[in-house]
Image (cartoon, rainbow, N blue to C red; front, side, top):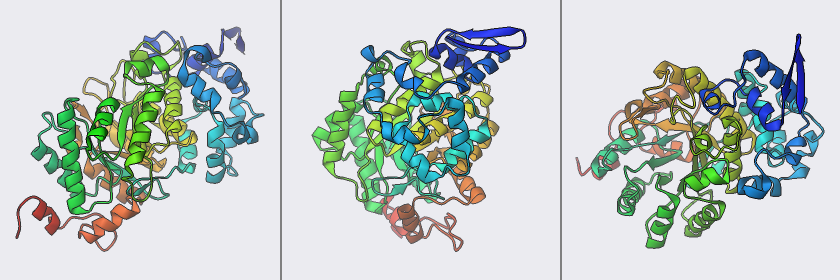
Length: 460
């Protein structure tokens, strides 16, 4: 039991799970679940009490039972106590001060990552302002490799997302070429298929591989089909680069996605066996989102931000190439407005980077949320300043297949210009060879390069 006096009232929190939930900044999902603090005063009291909790308490008091949850077992059984040693004596508040200290640099944060649990990083995030989250996230560096290198300092990548409502190959190809001309696609070219049909996924992957190979693009492709579909495609000989799967922070929530840790391991090993990477072998692409465990009824009374951080433990185990928090996609039931979406996106970057993950973000909202593109412009700038590894590149920022608003190819170019970021080095060299870069190193297409015209069947 945790107590915190505030004025004439003493706030009592029955256990660590309740304390964590009440300390969370306000969001509609926690209100929906009946977990949120009942007042701003109670929230502040919980944050003060949480600041005094020793970090080791999170190892001895799991929020989701060890005996019944394989994600908890993964967190506890793989914990690196030696990595935690430099901060093991600290409280949550003490960890906050340590993270923000000038002496805590990228090397120290990289070494600490295996010793931190999701619950620890979720707890400390609840004590931080947005600028605190940004400062720490920007000090973290997580670099991954497949056909190119993503996450290097000063770099900022884009997932080219050429979705089409009927999986029309010509429409998808047109979006791909549009994105490439505007410098998108170094994180990957990734399609959300309109259906989970194996035949459609096979055709899409073959299209992606044809475009990539004919244009000699140093990037990687992915069709975001269910992992079982991708496993079948690998067995069929389909050209699979990255394996996608949505993941969550509890065994039950993952079961609602039709997966478990053993299945993810099988997919990871199958993709590794293909040896399709040229500069590295990170082969998994995961997507997450606050509210997924709650929407499945598998949150165990834990607040949605902590459950999201637990999903990062699943991702970390498989050394992914990219992790994407799809921040505003689930809807206003979980994140009501632009303010909540902004807070959550920066929390996710902070927590994921601290845990050693190559974090990206789908800066997005649904049309029934209290948000607009101004909110997304502001959030995008904050994320890029925080060192986000990648964001989405969607034609016109409007995904006509998934029916939501995201970020465009032009948005990414604006951020590269504004904040002095560059794309992945191998991809940058390819853009220059295509004549798509000006004398100042900026992506400025002056026309359609010859290889593009040849691929379109429009020879001069």
